[in-house]
Every structure is written in C-alpha cells, then in structure tokens.
Length: 225
Image: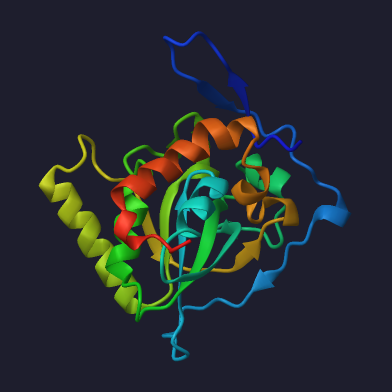
C-alpha cells in the first residue's frame, strides 16, 4: 500500500478526520521512476485538442476530478514549475525543487471551454490558502494555473480578478498564473491513482468527498457512464 505524504487519524463519529503531510514513505527506486520531460506546449494548438496544466493540491485529487469531466481526453499527473530536471517524487516532497504537483489536462475545446475548466478548478479546491490544501502543506501543493496559450492566460487572469472583486471567497485568491514550463510526468504508481486505489484511506476520506462535491455541483458536465 502506498501512502502519499500523510497519515490518517481516526476519532469518534462526532469529530472530523485529519491528515498531515509526511513525505517519508514515497518510493524512489529507479525501476519505479518513469519520469520523462515532455515538450513545452505554449503554442496555440491546431489539432483540435488543447492542453492546460493545473496545480490544486494533491495531484491524485485533481486527476480524479478532471477524469470525470466531459470533454477531457486525458489527465496526467506530474511536476511543473521547478528548477531541476527530472525530479523524483521524493525530491518534490522535500519542497526544495520548487515544483508543484500538477495535472496536465488535454481537452476537446468543441466540447469543453476553458471557462468551464476554470470553474471546476476554482470550485474543487481552496484557491485562497498559500502553499496548502487542507493538511497537505508545502510549495508543491500550491494553487497554480500553468497556461499554454495567450487566451488561457487572459481568461484565467480575468476570472481570478472577477472572483476577488465579487467576494466569492472570504480571503484573496493566491492562485499562481504563469506560463507552462517543462512538464515531468510522475512515477507510474501515481497515474490513475483513485481509480486503482479507491479503497485506501486517503482516497476514502479526502478524494471521495471531492468527487461527490464535483458530481453534485457539475452533474450536467460529467462524462456519461
């Protein structure tokens, strides 16, 4: 069983369940490290498929949500925004590489607009907590939009500004909006994590509630079974 940088404390039914980041149980064997650098895709896409990269805390959570969104063609967990090449999960967990845990999302713009993606992004995590989502703390868990086109940059900045002005959140949005850089796909065991490990404690107590919220709020935007 792989535990992702945190442990679970279960208490009686009158209390909540809390998690803490630990980052000391990540695997780092060469045989498990399937990291590869992909091309920086800042250019406007002409193939009918667009790409955007989101950081919103644990990439297991982000992946599980966006996999269920109609119009999304693929979701890959990985690392972006750091200062070294080919980082391992253990190195990213240290916070010393400056990478964020991200999901690189490809989508069909004829079925899914960038505004819809951003709506899901902002509503399925807390964009007001700096370098933290829940008990997952560290720069690797920062809220970030890595745009791949000028249009994505413009719309992201506009929506962030509008949300701040509207008072939608009690605190200012701290989401980083920056150009996509080198993307390093995470180790194999991080890919499709919730679908393969849904009964693990972190999946049950952290990811499952996010999916339930997504299904409730975005029912009309979900992929059909």
